[in-house]
Length: 259
Image 1 (spheres, rainbow, N blue to C red):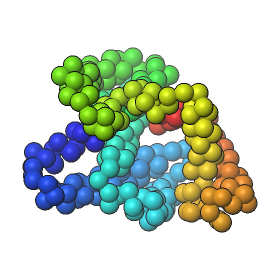
Image 2: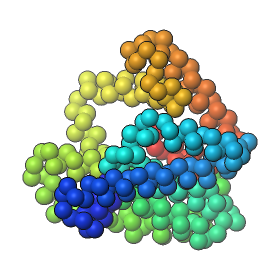
Image 3: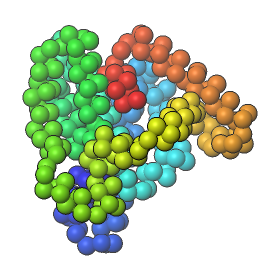
Image 4: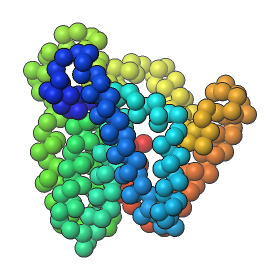
């Protein structure tokens, strides 16, 4: 997470003394993510504060969430900013939405992009939601406020030249700065593409179920455990589709682009 890590470095440039600061920053964003998730879930059709709080509580004590929240990774800081962007966009991207909320959604989206370039998917989803709701004025404000953030993620010749000096450094650099280039680096031929596609399809079918079952019963090699996970995932996806049919929110559009 180059942008967030640069803040830690400016505050405390000495390593490893700055690791503790980075861990506390990740923990802060983890708590922020839980608050943002609660604000989003309580707005769903058929939901309420108690139900949203229960889901957030299960998430907070999930082993995977606990592990990631204590590591210096970009996952939860990005998730917190993206979730806040979705919360602000839900209120802003409608015909009667306030300009200030549209600007706020753009700022959270811009910060998410500075954390991980995959934040572009968040911006695309919010714009799609605005067009779906015909909130053209709010979409224009969103784009104008977001534009300066995009400037910082544009390729720069000097940075790319320095990143190209060492293969290991270049791999790390493009992982955070260009998912397109990192994808080409990771998928050099069709055989690798086929194997990665198979792994991604399996993860897509199993991962949602790990919210309820972690780890899968019998481990990842258990056919019975895998089938149970897939069955739960189908139920979860069916619930998401039903919720989307009732009320399409920006988070649903974001999921489409993010996937």
